[in-house]
Image 1 (cartoon, rainbow, N blue to C red):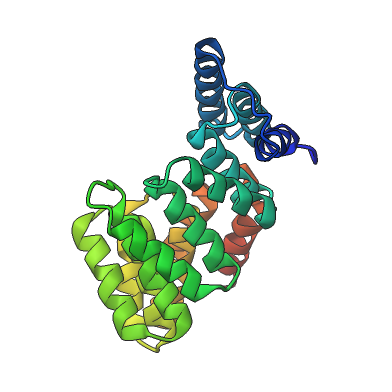
Image 2: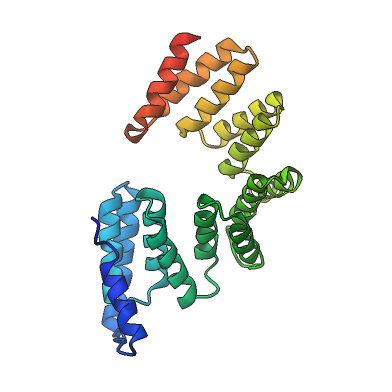
Length: 252
């Protein structure tokens, strides 16, 4: 599991030495097939299998930007190997400078690293791509980065704009709820967490956040319902959240 970046790294070394192998059409097609298999595995929650397929895709064609981006996502979010993830996002952008998904993802990584100015710059660049179909995501992420920097007013403006563009943008409602909660606007926070739960009815976290907020307002019965929903919706990988919701329900 810990040698996952070896094939792409070797390809990059060879390329920098001027000895790069130009993939044949057969190798490019094989790379696309392995990439598709990786997507299928990832959608089924099999992240290690997905990573293996993406690495096979890069072994066939080290210049596959989609595979670099996909490896970056897994290394970033599933394995928390941020430096390696950064290298793959950057390589995807080097291969395809207009790859706004990779730019948005790299922004998310910089946000996780606390490099807010770098994240904001990347999100703004993604938003400049008028053809980027997930521009609402970049704008919502921009808003969150601004909030982390202390610019609450512009943060709210951007997140609300993202929700206006895509009313089903669950993360936008989540982040609005957190901002309002942390700035003492509990009733508005509960309303936004309610929107989060309505738009993402299968996400246990939404029920948990709404329940905690309702408990703060003394809405005990509503909070109990939310915590029960959280416990029911929690996935096997969310055992800690499931236990927390059960405990909160028992203590109300």
